[in-house]
Image 1 (cartoon, rainbow, N blue to C red):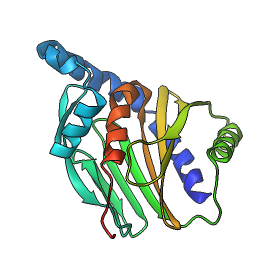
Image 2: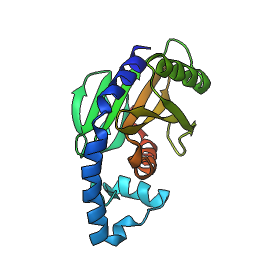
Image 3: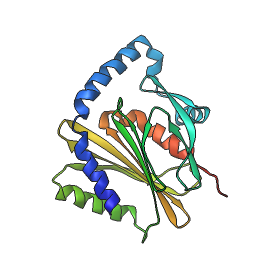
Image 4: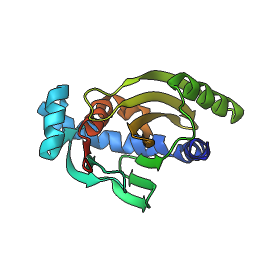
Length: 208
């Protein structure tokens, strides 16, 4: 459970999100006022096409995607190039975007035993209660379409200056599991939810 503990501890470092989000939000709103066509919400199909082509407008800003091999997993995925890799080992990948105050983390593990989403939810709720942090379970389900069986969940938590979302996906590959986590200001969730789903749907298995 060390990975979960690490992720929860990182939530404490998000307390400065609110002030930066307000500043960034003003820039985004100004961009949308000058270019109202950017405010239109693309369909899931349009988002998927944009990710596969390598370019997508998110929150009024162009985001570039590139096919990226993930550690030694035999998996590749389209990832946003605006996220800078800050850690890369054979089992861990961490990407961050300081401007958006968002983080993307992946871990390649071999689970000791299977865990249901219900068990994971209960563990997370207990962890947050023990740290006296607020936590709200938002949704759970399966990522469709996806080349590998993938379960996901989303919850938000309180920090000093607002709330952050935490998206967690469990990608199954043989006896191994790729844990895929994205977190950021909750106000960004509606914009990034379909993008994150599209990123996982872009997954390809390369070692068949």
